[in-house]
Image (cartoon, rainbow, N blue to C red):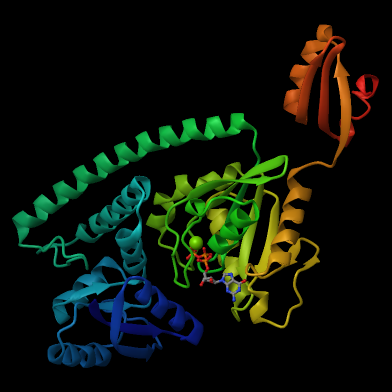
Amino acid sequence: MEQVAVVFGAQTLHEEGIQEFKELVAACDMEIVQEFRQVLRQIHGNTWIGKGKCAEIHTFLQAHALDAVLFFNDLSPLQIRNLEAYWNINVMDRSDLILEIFARRAKSKAARLQIENAQLKRQRSRLIGSKKHLGRQSASGQNKGLGEKQLELDRRRIASRIVSTTRELKQLEKTRMTQRNARLQSRLPLVSLIGYTNAGKSTIMNALLQYSNSSKEKYVYEKDMLFATLDTSLRRIDLGHQSFLLSDTVGFVRDLPHELIEAFHSTLEEACYADLLIEVIDTSYADYEQQMKVTSDTLQALHIGNLPILHVFNKCDQTDIPYPSMHGEHLFISAKNKECIEELINQIRLRLFPPTTMVKLCIPYEKSNLYGRLLTQAQILQRDDFEDGIHLEVALPNDLLETYKAYMH
Ligand SMILES: Nc1nc2c(ncn2[C@@H]2O[C@H](COP(=O)(O)OP(=O)(O)OP(=O)(O)O)[C@@H](O)[C@H]2O)c(=O)[nH]1
Ligand SMILES: [Mg+2]
């Protein structure tokens, strides 16, 4: 496990933000050996923190062999270069840390390429203006700079790898489009789980899978850790004669690196095609309203603004709020409670499936085009062919009852 020091330097330091940063460090499998804090009256252009604090950290680093120094905030390429030159150690900022979590843990080919592409673009921006050497080594141990020649080689390597990862991602995008079209043709409605990281999205997906008696292999990974989910999973949920698709994806966090939003755009964009978004909120978290703001800002950045959305306030078992309960478009639940999952299913049903009535129809053979139309409009539960026509048992949307009245028997 890598040993690191963390630096919290800002004009105001909130304990909750600090705690979240420590959880990000833990999610990256790093151990915090020492913390430095400085409330800044002003940001120092060259080093972010003040001279005295830089010297204090320098002294500490000389006495302890650490792998990196992590900054709570984002830094400019110049600040990173200056600090690394002074301390002679890797310096990572908040965006580096988030990218590193993703780089270490993403599994699908698309996610790995998206991350690599984002990291390369970041490395490229660090090289711009760098005169001497790359000077920075990623925590995974690559890219040790060796001088001017090395810098030029690094520039070329990064540029060509950006081109090839972008090309591969375009190819994957095409495959995804084909899959998306096939899904659209299947006419199954799509529900997307979204929300802040660790809110309980994957737990809810598993509870819905359990409710629909899916096999355990279909379950997704859930864990009390930031960014437990880094890939998108799509599952079919069967509810008697009605079914829908459910997607679980990467959670959001405040100040998500813009390279990452850009890189994950196509993955997260899947949510644009949803018939319903379920925003999961960790109600037990004191500042959950701030997390909801981050979610809505991220949706805006992804241009997903106007889809129907059901707000699911999860983890009510950790609060005084009664559950399950519904207030407007806000559903209060605990993903660990069966009654809550039934209520969630009810709410999804109401939004996805128009009310239907069970009817028996007899469609004469000369009207077989009507049968074709019914296939797309209603759920056919039984078909028997008799002499006078096709006998059907159908869950017919109520607004079509009048149209098929003449064929009921
Ligand atoms: N007490 C309580 N814990 C819950 C509830 N729902 C989820 N959890 C826990 O919260 C933690 C995070 O759950 P996940 O389902 O992995 O959260 P997620 O939103 O998928 O998180 P990411 O994939 O990291 O974005 C796990 O330890 C769950 O067991 C709940 O209703 N009550
Ligand atoms: Mg998850």
